[in-house]
Structure formats: C-alpha cells, structure tokens
Image 1 (cartoon, one colour):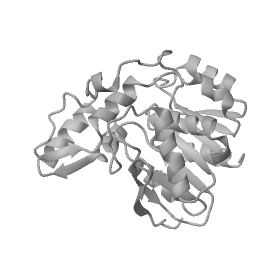
Image 2 (tube, rainbow, N blue to C red):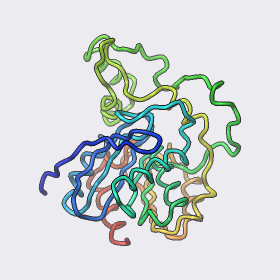
Image 3 (cartoon, rainbow, N blue to C red):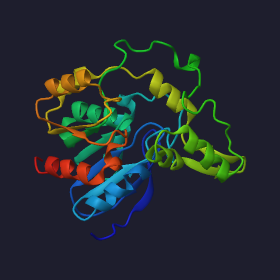
Image 4 (tube, helix red, strand yellow):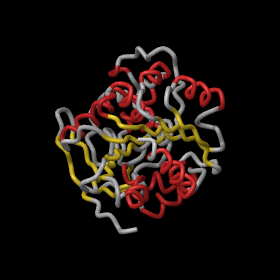
Length: 277
C-alpha cells in the first residue's frame, strides 16, 4: 500500500469556512464525517487504507477543529448543508459518505435529503433514536455547557497535565487519542479546539431521525460495536427494518470507535459494502 498524500485546505463556503483533508486523486470520492468533539484526523488510517483507489475527503465539521464556529443550533440539517456546499466547492456531483457517531446522523441526513449526491452511506455506531419532539428553547437562552468538558480544568497549564487528565477521563486508549486530536496550544495554555456552544447546541437540538431512513434509497451499511451501548438491539433492528437496502454488521470489539477498534474486521465489512455500489 502506497502512502497517500493528504492535502489540507480551507474551503470558504457560503456561510462558513470548512477545513478539510483531501487526497485530491482522480477517483470516486468518499466523504468521511467525524463524531462530536472530534476532527477529521480520526480518518487518517481510513485515508491510507483506501487512498490508492478512492479520493478520500475528511473535513472538520462546523464547530470543530479548524473550521468555523458560529453561534448556531448545529442541527444535522445545517451540518449536512455544509457538506453539500463542500461537495459543490470541490465540483463533486456525488460521493460515498461514511459517518461515525454524530457524523452518522449527518451522513444519514445527507443520504435522505440529497439522494442524488450520495452513492452509498455508512452509519457507524449511531442510533436514529432520540427525543421525539424538537427542543423549542430559543438559541439565545441555551446554556453554553458541554456535558463532557464543562468540569475540565481548561486551559491545561501544560501538555503533560492535559495528557494525564484526558487519559484519566476517557474509558479507552482510542477515546483518549480522539480527544487529544482536538487539543491545541494557545497563549493561555492547552485548549480544546471544538466550541462548547456548538457541542451544547448539537446535543440540545438533536432529535430522533427514524423518519429519514425510508427515504434513503442508496445502499446503507450499519455498523455497531459489540457493547451495544450506542445502538441497543431494539434501535438496531428498527433501523434495519426501515432501510430498503441495508447491510448490518457488528464489530467484535466493544469500543465506540468501530472504524479503529478492529481495523481488519471493519475494513473487511467496508470492502464488501463497496462492492454493492
């Protein structure tokens, strides 16, 4: 396997600047969407695995990493719109879309709302379940409180303090690395690159999206971890029943980062999914 060159760019879109990684190869495109608190950096191994045969694009989504962080509700519809604007910016008519966790919701929303732009969609360890009714609280009244990092001693005074604290706070090495990818040194100390307002809003305005699943007509890969924590049996079965063209698999490792916990197993499933497109 050759080492794929990763180009890093900023797309200045209609409403926001989106930082993205792009192999820029002349091949079918795969758009990779990270989870909440994350960055596109979580897809580097995926990029290297598929970079020989696909153009792989991994943005930092709005509110995350080096992308813009406006005051907004950070709904799946809003964030899916950003990705359509990014595809337009890159002059791509369509892409295969793979999304992990929060990114899975956005990937599913893309496939249901913009079917002509999505050739296939992989939803990784994300249930379509959630609050049935939308949150009616006005944005200006929403507390800016990220439930994960609100009690962290930010900014960290040193890299060592950050590493020690985050390692203790996380339940796995993969989760530790996931948050470390969002750590940056500033003049005040070591901060997280995601916006606390964005995290709070994305959680507050999240709602169930089962109704979108029957609208997805392209092939779908559903992947969940063996822990079933993110996708319980009832949710997994309901999602499969609502998707007309679905391949559902379970990774033997319990870690939520299903694309990294057992790479050989995950890539085997993803390879079979690609053959259906």
